[in-house]
Length: 484
Image 1 (cartoon, one colour):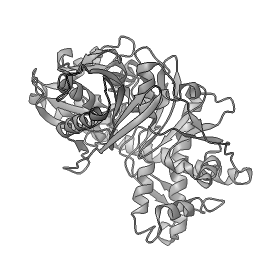
Image 2 (cartoon, one colour; image 1 turned 180 degrees about the vertical axis):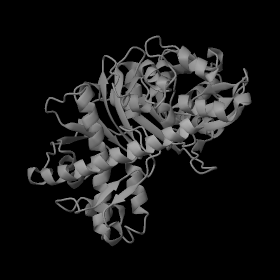
Image 3 (cartoon, one colour; image 1 turned 120 degrees about the vertical axis):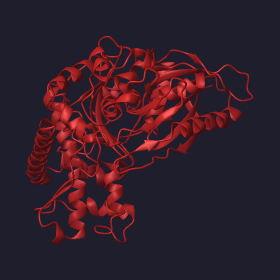
Image 4 (cartoon, one colour; image 1 turned 90 degrees about the vertical axis):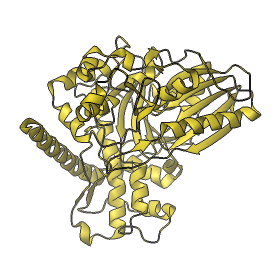
């Protein structure tokens, strides 16, 4: 029996597989703390305890001999050489390095680092978090006994005694050279670090023996694995090499798989490895997706009595966007295509006199106008869909009216997919090289022709305002940086 453990930002999940079937799942909530404004931390010691607890619970029922890890792409932990935690795990949404990330984008090194690592410059990146920490705590950061890692390395280190990271996860750190598959020398020099302070980069399928397995004497092997986003696409490999996949959750992403690396001329799409030698995951991440819907649901200014389902129904009820109301949905900054976490919400039009229904519909449209911006970027640079629909995955796409509205806003046919936890299934596939059948919902949703022109006109207004805000914020931060 084998298990795949996914270390997500909101949940920890363990799935037990037997002969291409998931026979058991265990889940724990992953708690995020906010000790200061903009901080987003998780406790690696608690995560370790939860992972052990899930394993022991599963191992009482199943004879598990192999574990593969899937994990969040971007996390940042500092410890001593013996593993004592100095800085708890900063997740991708931690904003402490936000201004520094935007300012660094404008530097002479930004283009070089992006093309060496495939990771856009942004506060999500462990590289930018490390650069920020070096400036804030130069003495501590210069200590040769300091160790830097992500949450997966911390767990594997504690479970096996090996200080390692897999090639795919290292490729999302913003610090690994895509060609050499080693820690990038330019970045090490910039941070003043040695390779010994970082985990050794190893194969995603390198077997490591688990040291502690409770009362069981069975040998258990741990495989470093890959990242959650990469494995989610890998589960659909046959489809996502030909079609783009929009994953819609708390945050979101549009991604596809390629046998060759694709690097953006504008440094605005990521290029990560899924496995040691490919395929590559190409695309961009979106900060403001399901979290905007959740925030709107709890906001009494726009929703006082409706259930979440009723709110969604109102959002997609109208055939046309509300006149003169445009919502830039940057409640949580933004990644693709601007990679500017300093962007903020903008309500354009006479928002104070707008009805709650108009506000709800403008918010929904704004979320998917941002998706359309990223779609345009990917098509401009790399991907030619050949008329194929956009694959979509997420709970909201269980609603046909939502699918129809999204297809019209995007002016792009969409096709829903249904497959539980895709990253867990992708992890099983990576370890066993066996495929689990993918379920595609019946039918494709096409844009409503009579409505497309109106939405496209408002999208162009959205685009103009979004690019204007992005340029204004970046110019301001560049001036602040040059004044120092």
